[in-house]
Length: 296
Image (cartoon, rainbow, N blue to C red):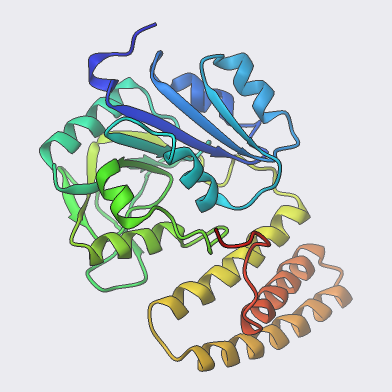
């Protein structure tokens, strides 16, 4: 089936990891005929089979090892031949109307590196984290905007990327396995002088953390990578690296003590969370990477 002329210039890239709960609706909501690339990070829950059943036209890249969100997105974006690549989380729903608004915003803002929609929360309200110039931390907007506006940060759940700008910046920093990769990308686009636009006309439902079952193993992985990525991000954009490693060692010790306390209190979630934070902080202090993949 041919694509709509408005969508001939965009390719969708979705990274999955045990995303069986949401991926069928995600790919099913996308307009028919548009090129979709799913990069699967070694899922074990049948994600790839579900994609094949739901949309046989989807191209699937099957990684045998999970090397991280940024790495997998870079894999998918390297296959994009159109002028735009649309990066989506598997727990987002982008229909033809939302995509049309994103493409129209790209036409209105030809110098923008990325265009993002207004993300809708499942229980109502919207998700719109903002960041000012030279800031490294973002905050949630309280008022829904009434038109396109420029910001210094776009959340990575749904990003329409200008491929010229994407190649210029070099994609995601693959040292980051998970978390803060979108903030890092935004800061690098800012440094190169690109604008980043939110268009509230494009409204995209976002489950938010709903694509992966919340087991204790997932809790460990999330807390570990969040902790490591926070240290890496702060270290990359300022501060004394020796002081950062010393802070990480102190944090590792404190989190380890808290984990032991929660063993006594019979709280497995708190045990796992604090043990993960202790492990990640220690890894950063010892200058260990977040992934075993060798550079290059």
